[in-house]
Amino acid sequence: MTSPLEELLPSTQRALLHRIATAQAEGRAPSFVAAVQRDGQTVWTGSRTCVDGHGPDADTQYRIGSITKTFTAVLVLRMRDEGLLDLGDPLEKHLPGTGVAGGVTVAQLLSHTGGLSAEAPAPWWERTPGSLRPELADVLGEQARMHPAGRTHHYSNPGYTLLGQLVEAVRGESWAEVLRREVLEPLGMGRTSAEPEAPHAGGWAVHPWADVMLPEPAVDLGLMAPAGQLWSTTGDLCRFARFLAVGDEKVLSAESVREMRTPAAPAGSGDAVGGYGLGLQIVQGGGRTLVGHSGSLPGFVAGLWVSVEDGVAAVALVNATSGVSAPAVAADLIRIVVEAEPRITEPWRPLPEAEVDQELLALTGPWFWGTSSYALTLVADRGVELQPLRGNGRGSRFAARPDGMWTGLDGYYLGETLRVVRREDGSVSHLDLGSFVFTREPYEPGDAVPGGVDEGGWRGL
Image (tube, rainbow, N blue to C red; front, side):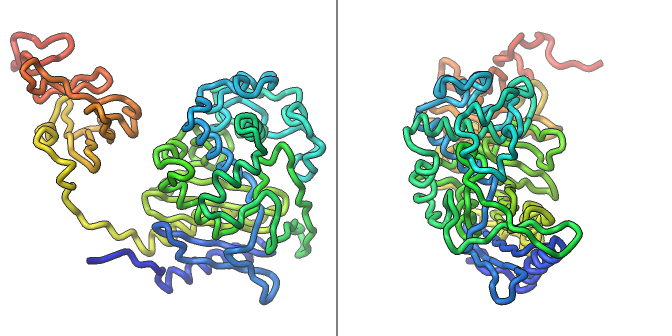
């Protein structure tokens, strides 16, 4: 029996160190700390610094900026799963008095499709204390709506302020306290906090034309905190990365986390990402999909990405306002590991006996939607998969339901119902998939084909 290697090869470790060393030197970053996780285990950490003998480690806090938004999204999804709200609810249902933003839905706020402005009104909110914006009206300003809701992806920091206020309104506690109790403590993230806790890095601006630095302010963002307040470590963010890959019933189910990772909006103009889910950026490139988030505040840049299919995640944290693209470096760290040490495929094993019966087996094999051929196969937990045998037909995986039907898990049939339709004698007539009829033969006379089958049958020219 074989098992995945727990440690990276020395050559891989050297390649990872080389990548962050190059980034720190070329980007002139005061310090740089990174980590890689594989199959839920941290397999590499590294750091570089301009101070001899004083390098940061996996327990050193950095500000993570907009990665905070993903944590806020988790809190909202938790409330949805508890039945306290629906993602289709307008904000004003739970947070009255929000003016033109009140008609925007919870889902649109999560996916940045509410049409709200990108930033709060002046002064620049990232470098000024939240006490300057004590009310929501101070955050939204007079032109809160920039685009029609639901029409386009327009990244909005005030949108996540509204979500934070939604959390407080429903829970009756501060956003920071709810986050600590419902997410940070259950996931063991004791080094993630709203305010810096030693040891932590200081934020710096590096002069664009000279090798000199200037300290950046680290202010309490007040109402804007749910959009970018948090401080964290590579150790804690690796724990969070594991959660984003597989979920945790103490916080959010795997199904709900999968929903967060599902594209809900295309990339906006000028965005470097491939799309946006519910609180998660989605990047397509190099033959893989990365989910996670980037982050920046004056003095800090951060990146957290997870390749769920490869089982690899990476975190990169930098204490400089600009000069280094931490998200790009984190993506490179994943690429280095995946290309140097491809995932070892799990051994094939038969399905458990309890998941297989003769009725299920009788459903497998070819089916026809019109003249298009498909194959139905069994998968784990009594699920099925329907895939085209040729061409570019629509395939999907389906999860078994207690009522004997299946629910689509992805693609065109996400959420749609697949059911077996039987004749009066109990034999299988056809499969019904969202009203589409799949039969054992293409247009067989007597089959339940909508519109009927020509009595003349198949014929030549």
